[in-house]
Image 1: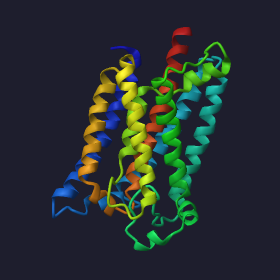
Image 2 (image 1 turned 90 degrees about the vertical axis):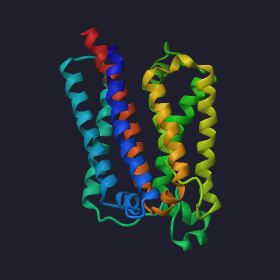
Image 3 (image 1 turned 90 degrees about the horizontal axis):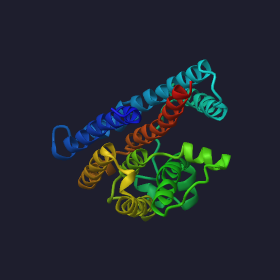
Length: 286
């Protein structure tokens, strides 16, 4: 097996497990009268997806420590990568401790349906203020893991790797595999039954990303391998099921917890990807 594919196997397998768990809970809630509240219960604070998010934060801490220890033992010149790992490690520790110690409160999200009818009467400023964290997180994933990579891939913008800035941008650029899973994570939403027209901004941005992805898919076949194609099939299936179960998603006030778990998986996928490349490269140069 190609060594660079070893990481793809692990990452894609974890995505598949989370995908199956989420899709099955959606389908059961949609078509079973007895378990119609299953997805709603799983997405509530301090339930299944909350635990998955905490677990991913913990994984981020372990990945950071592992990379710092191994890269230090091999005594190679990866100062920037170590610095990034230290920053993210501190961030993961802070977020995990904050989540475990803070009291949970119901937090509606701008990027999904909110059952409370008073939401429709909120002004633009209030919407942004009450959902600022969700907006920032989704915007970050859209821009850095979907839009920018797809624009670079789709329109043939190259990075000057002879320049140190371009070299590091190329090194940290997410792979197509990460982009595909990030696109699915962004598509995990209610496609209709939204309580405000403003909420369809998320849907419009997602459609734009799909168009960009289609361009890349049609013009750059060399970017796609077996795992990318497999994850594309899962993405298409997931989008169709989310469309079919859109009313179930819209009724889950905390469904954004499920979406956040996929977002964190995307981030960890990118995080581990460049760590793996760095350590693999250093191993052969060692």
